[in-house]
Amino acid sequence: MKLSEELQWRGFVNQTTFSDLSALDGAPISFYFGVDPSADSMQIGNLAAAMMVRHFINHGHNAFLLVGGATGMIGDPDGKADERNLKTLDEIAKNKAGIATQYKQVFAGKKFELVDNYDWFKDISYLDFLRNVGKHVPMSMMLGRDFVQSRLGEDGSGISYAEFSYSLIQGYDFVHLYKNHGVTLQVCGADQWGNSIAGIDLIRRMEGGEAHVYSTPLVINKATGIKFGKSEGGAVWLDANKTSVYKFYQFWLNVDDEGVIDYAKIYTLLSKEELEVLSEQQKQNPGARPAQRALAREVTALVHGKERLESVERVTEVLFGARLFTDLDDGDLKVLAEEIPRVIAGKTVVECLVESGVASSNGEARRLIASGAISVNGDKITDDLQLEATALIKKGKNNFILVR
Image 1: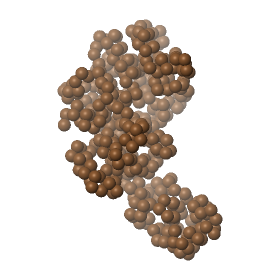
Image 2: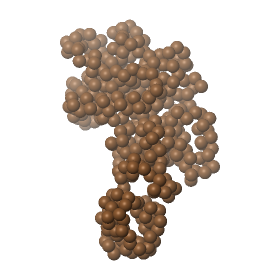
Image 3: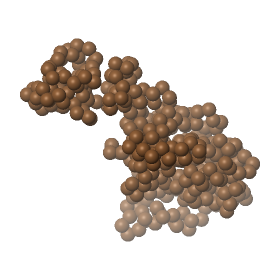
Image 4: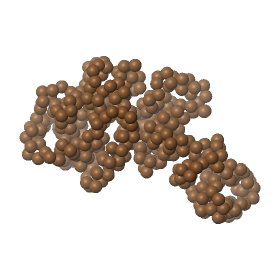
């Protein structure tokens, strides 16, 4: 399958300056994709665009992955109703390191060059920038941006000169990469279209050159019609310290039936043939959720590695009765300990139920045990027990306590 065909089939086609997508099927193109360090981790919205980048790399194009150390010092105002708070230099350094690490994980085994726009901005003086770059930018173009109009409008909160200049700074990234690395294409998420177009215009005005932009659409939750990628706890992050590997896996395991195959096209590298088989299996037995299971496995392995995937799979199987608790190793128990209430061994089951809040009193705990609602390590109990070793207490289907 040609790249243009794959992008269309997977749902990666949005706005582009190419008049014909077959331009992507020819000789290798040097392109760049960037993320600003507004946080120390990417979210799964960024991951969708990163997966598109993988297809560009897989089809022979040359990738420059940018961490926005300079643009991160200002913050992208597009889509923001109010002025951002500036990040400290220490925050930016920490965030850059986090994003660079995730680039290396998501693009493991792929050829790419990691660049930081702070490296070329740190030596440019203010006067040089105004003279060599600002002189080429019409005010009408900058004032015409939607986010500027909304912030300057009657009900707007206003905009600082720093944020007003953001698209000019990002535009110069494209110029620098064009001049120094032969980059002629920026790929981006739909929300970066306006900033990316500014770079094309600068290349034309400053260098007399031609460049292009290719954007991927926002991923929409088919069940709700809103932006995909939010859980009950907020954003779904790639950093396990922000979204645990277990919660990350569970997010994918619980996506809606209506959109699961479309999400798999975007977020996995499964082939058209593999996804057609999966789609048929989903139709035949939707209750078994074969598509969600495949999606959760593929994305978790990509972002967190095969070893951590296998650990959360074992933990999930134990919690939902498909595996013995005694099958878990120390690493699995550590995963489990992050997700459910924990009590220290040496207590009775009644004490564990009350201490963890699963039961409100000793009397309620005893009644739960007597009624057969409590199991320990998968076996129902009808009398209280003393727990001196690691164990898993379960009430009903979804209440668990880890005793260690």
